Image (cartoon, rainbow, N blue to C red; front, side):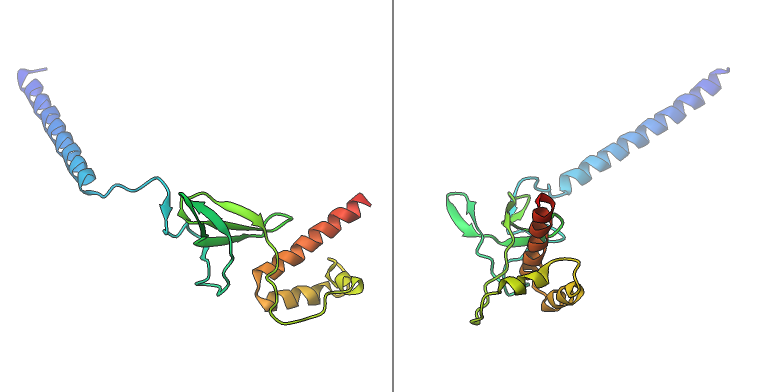
Length: 164
């Protein structure tokens, strides 16, 4: 190798090193300009998909009281978890905040009505003649708490049948 080749190679390496340093400096400058993203809890910030604002989107306020520092507040966001055999109501104050849960029950009806008799309750047993009609009526009602109560009944009935 001639001294000229060594000099050319040194120049190429020097240029590459200078370009790499310029790129690193640009990245550092960009990183300094960016607003750091918070990683802790963010009360009042929407937690993400599946969560809805308590009251605003459903016109139903779940009085789910959760601790917020030294005081207790009504949960800002709720989520209906219908995946398990026993549906749950999840509640939180915001993104990355603690999620609290309780069993999901149907909301009380403001109108006076008679309680269901034992024969009426049999209509809600899953996989019977009227099951598809009952499921259709529950879907038309568009009330997640009612759907949760029916699913809760199905799960309890299925568990009781297994035990029997």
